[in-house]
Image (cartoon, rainbow, N blue to C red; front, side):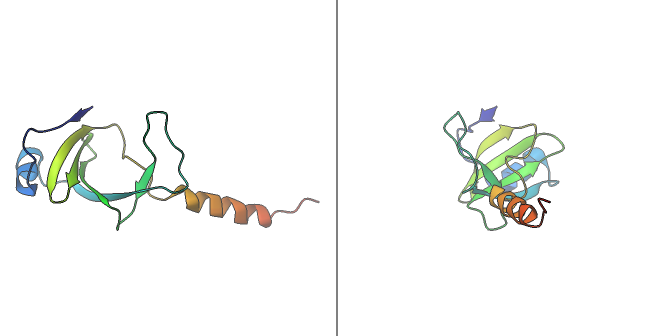
Length: 103
């Protein structure tokens, strides 16, 4: 579920409402991810990613930022994406197959 506040929230507002026990997480589009049926693409955690969120993972709450303001409050059951791109998985699976013998 996603809520869109009438007025974007400043960082201080978010902390006042939800507390200071958040993780600041950035996400990026995953070039090796699959398109979802809902028209969105997969993301993964990237410290330099273009999408910033405050996540209260123990409560299932994430606040998405646009520039410096919180524009969406999301109620989620898990992080939006994995800690690594699927590209790493594909690279690792290729290298592990090269090392196997077919004898």
